[in-house]
Length: 259
Length: 265
Image (cartoon, rainbow over all chains, first blue to last red; front, side, top):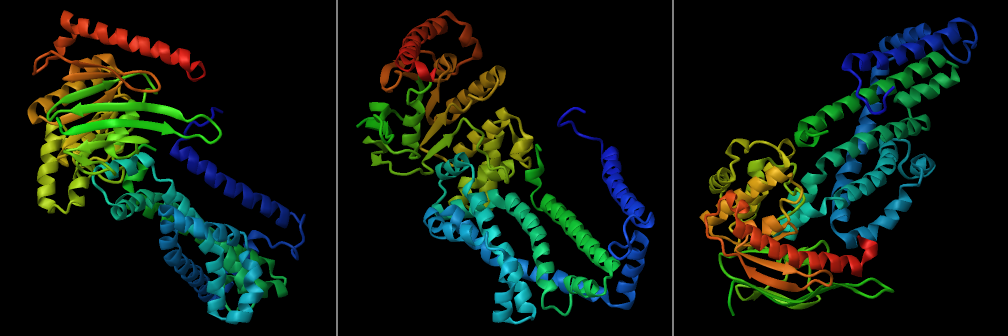
C-alpha cells in the first residue's frame, strides 16, 4: 500500500461497512458457537429482540429522550459561558494569564468524581445531571477556544491593523471569524466526550435515561439490554457527529477549500 | 521639511537576554516625496523589512522617529496601506469583502463600499472574481486583490514588503507591470522593499540600497527612465548599466554579510 494515497469512495464505504460486518460476525461466532456463556454476553439476535421490546413495551424512547436532553442541556450551558470566556482569554493576554492556570488544573478534575458531591449539593434531579455534563465539558471548551483564538495568524492581524482596524474590531472581524471553523470542530469533539459523562451520571441516582436502563439491566443480568443501550449511544453519537460535520461544511464553506 | 514621509534617525535593536543586542537597523534617515516610487534594495537580513514595518507602525524604533505629513507615527493606521509578502487576504471573506474591509471599518455606506471595491478590482483586472474566496485564486491573483484592498482604502503611502517574493518569475514580471501601470495612472506614493535588482530598477523612481547588518542606507539613486515604462526597457543597455551598478553595490554587501555572519548563511 502506498502511504497517504486517497481511496475511492466506493471502496471506502465497502471497507468501513466491512469491518462492522466482521465485528458482528465475530460476536455471533462467539455467542452462537457457545464459546461465551449467555449469562455473560447475549447474542446479536437476542439483543435486537430485547431492544425492540425495550422500545415498544418499556418506553425506552423516553429514556433516550431524557439522556439526549441532559447532554444537550448541560453542553449548551457550558458552551454559552465558555465561548465568551475562551474568546476573551485567546484575545487578551492578561485575561488568559488570570484564568488559564486554574482552567488547566480544573480540566483534569474527573467529572465523575464530582457526582457524590453534586448529589449532596443538587440532589438526584436534573440539576445534578446537567452539572456533571457542565463540569466535564466546560473547562475543555474554554481552553480549546482560547488556544484557537490565540493562534490566529499574526500576518492577518497585522494586515487588519494596516487597513485601519481598531482593537475591538480586530476581535470582532478577524479573531472570531477566523477561529469559527476550529471552534465548531471543538464543539463536535467535546460533545462526544459529554456523552460519556451523561451515562456515568445516570448510572448513579437516576430514575430515567439510558444509563439508568443499563443499571437496571445489570441487576437482571440482562446483557442483551445493556449491549442494546450501548449501541444506541454509539448510533446517536454517530448521527450527531455527521450532523455537526454537515453543519460546519454549510457554515464555513471557505474552510473546506484547498483541503 | 521635505516630502510626505520623513524617517529621522530610526534605529532598531533586538535585545536578547545574556547576549549582545542585535543591531538590525542603524540610525537611518530617509525622505520620501509625494508621488515618489522608492524601492529599498538590500541583502537578506539587512533590516529593510524592519524599516518598512516601523513606517507601518507594526514595529517600534529603538531610537528616532517616523513622520507622515509631519505627524509622528506611533501605531498602524489606514493612512499607510501595506501589502505583505505572505498572502494576507482574510480567508473567510470573498474577494469583494476583502477589498471592502477597510472601507467598512470607516463606516462607509455599503453601496459606496461596493462601488469603490469593484472599481479597484477592475484596476487589478479581477472584476470577474468578486465572489471568489482567496483560496480559489492563484498567488498572483491574491496579491492583486491585496493591492486593490490597500489602494481602495486611499492611503497616503503604500508600503510593500516584497509583495511578489513568493511568485514565479513570469507572474512576478506581469505584476511589476501592473503595479507600475497603476502607479502611473494613480500617482500614489510607494515605498517598496525587495531583494530583486531587476524589480527595484524597473518599477522604482528612486532606488535605495541598504548595507548588510547592521542595516543602513548606502546608496540613494534616482532612476532616470521616463514613464510610462515598457517591459522592453529591461533589455536596453541603459537598464543593464544601472543594473550593473546596483549589482556591484549589492554584491559587496552580500559578501560582507557572509563574512560577518558565516553561521547564518
